Image 1: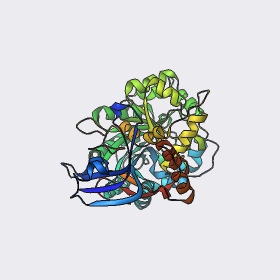
Image 2: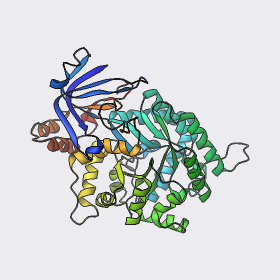
Image 3: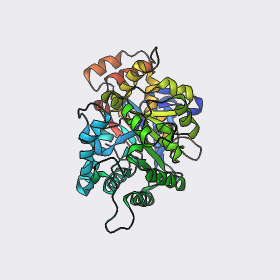
Image 4: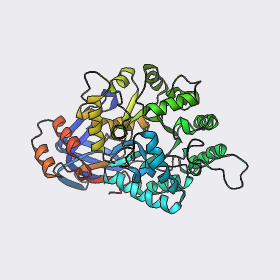
Length: 447
């Protein structure tokens, strides 16, 4: 066991309502192994209340620092690190001119491995300890990312990108050499093999990953739905309703479906542990479908602002009652930093689809990128409590050590914060990777 004395930020159980932050200026966090050897939170609270009970536990004193849950990124593209900051007039030209050419490089084992190392480094440097990530249509990219995440003990979920039409020929799923099955069937066989190899190995999970409906045939989407039915504990991830041109294209390709979103439901791809990126251009029937199936949205504000896609409707989501959390969406997203993402989400709320705008509270923003996103993923303990994105007893011991004096302006601003909301908002507005002094993940590896 090990203890840390610092200021502590965490969230009350979801049963007490979302976004209820708890804060101890002089707190003690105690971590130790569970029955499987995984490091979990044993106790959290004030130094005064806990110090005597844990007096024999080695304690690291972190004066002036804040320990907070590690961030959860609900949608990030591993092969798009080099695509950040590429200029384009919108989503579809951006894919054609930058994204697809870069993703072709991941057919190489060497390139995939080097990129995976950098990608995981960047996640940890920015305080992200759990990620739901896209790979490419190459098994090499999936294996490289899983291997690096396993080596670093990162909780990571990814999968083979399913894409059998409407993309460059050498980026589409390919049949095995000499195989009698076509590319579509091979992509499903490859997905099944990857599930068997990686899903549930330590902190790794598999996600069935149609890129988005227009790049999959009916046969591939139907096969993906059948795969999901056979493996009820894997995740599903894709994109939906991000861009109006994309929506029009999807409606042309799948006219039998009520809406773009309904296409996924028609193929059996909407349920709990299904996470759809963007979810911007929805009507109330779409919102009800999200709620009724248990699917969730990965809100990607820096990407949506950068590509001019639109604004996620927070008020509409809350009115319908479907769940969501925050995501960087690198490389359409412009930063790995959760602070940049939270600030962009604040802008989206203020300028979004409600007439008066919506002022998301600092606690709500932070919750969306930690405990809220963790609840979306549905990684739960025996008691039903989410295990990631929070520091309640029993949670996996993923946390960040924040230095609120990391820059002169941040130090000046946080020193005059008169409330928890002011402190959190100062870090959201002024923070970046310099604020993250250390990232600690559950099996003890630090970055």
